[in-house]
Length: 512
Image 1 (cartoon, rainbow, N blue to C red):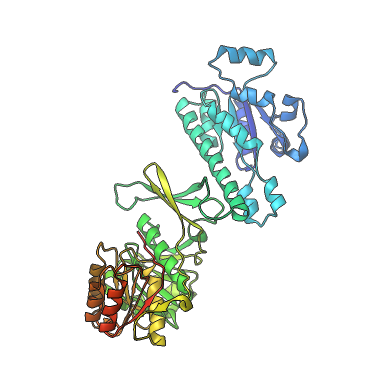
Image 2 (image 1 turned 90 degrees about the vertical axis):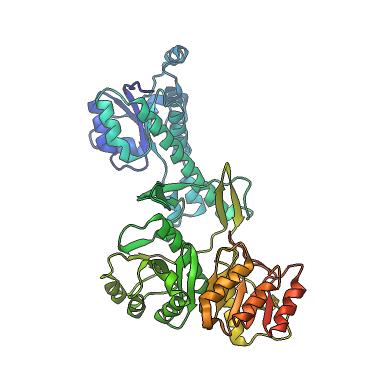
């Protein structure tokens, strides 16, 4: 594939007109015939660039309000002919057809139309048919045709045309880009249909489309390459997040910010969440953002060092001042006051990220070797009225509030997960343990004396009573858990022995 392909005839038909006039003019100056469609041809002619209309090649005018322009053998035979196959060349000659050497096409702005609020009928008209067909044909025949879908490639391709031909290695890279471009486009269309026409749940086929928006310095570790992508039909990562201050976000920063932001969204404007290594080490809800942050920090001030902080509402000067003494990698919130930004300005290593609170996603996708696992996103929407008090002692109203708070946090802690909470703030978190009793021990150790009178949440049932016994030693007063163990009666009996209140929710929240 190293042999250069001389370019004598090019088809140029683009929705994104950026850079097309200099490209076409350069091609003509290099002796290339330019064939074009509709508005692209009109723009080139207006700029004094010699151009042949597609209709003059096919012998047919554009039809059906532009739905049919290039779907004709005079175009596609010229693109698909294998120039290394003498029979193909003889067949073209027999029908009076000429081959193309270069195809420059990008597609109707479907995503932009949907983002602008297009009606169903308007969106349908932005589903490109001829464009993807041209691109796929040229990409398939990359040995004989160069295909370009990105304006950023124009200077490189034109330089090679002027130097005598497009090299085989570049043609192969362009073909890969072309197929990826069409695949992402189709993914956007499929997702749009799925937004209003799908049955719900994991579909029979799942098409994902992502566009790279930035290269990252490295991944989780320095030896891993990484990049940030935008999902089709989205404004970008975190709904179009803006980095207002600080260095570029790292791979780990994005991961932890996602976890912190997601938990903060479950509580709303009064929430502050501190995440370390994708687990919340502190979370609280209070009347002010500064009070919420201080309560979250008190949960585990050691782990908070170098963490990521998310707020559920606007960050003000008091909240910024509360954060002043702790090294923090990222703070993310829906908005910041000018005074808060001024307070952060002196902390050059702090990344300040403005992003709206996330909307609930429908599906969660995790790649595995040779495939993917897909599930509905875990929601925390249990109704208190459907929960069961199974102990002799019932929780007080304040304990109910702490139990429900801890239950929500536990759903976003890696399993096995134990959360101790008091006054709508975590006081101890035990995360990611293989043994549930170990998770209790860690949460109790983190809480210390603050565990006295606290509420405890477990993301799944207690397989033995030992977890309850350890919680009692730490001073836990009330427990919320799904239930469902063959030893539930033994676990409830332990709670009664220790004078605890216990709630069964009937629903677990594993997070692997």
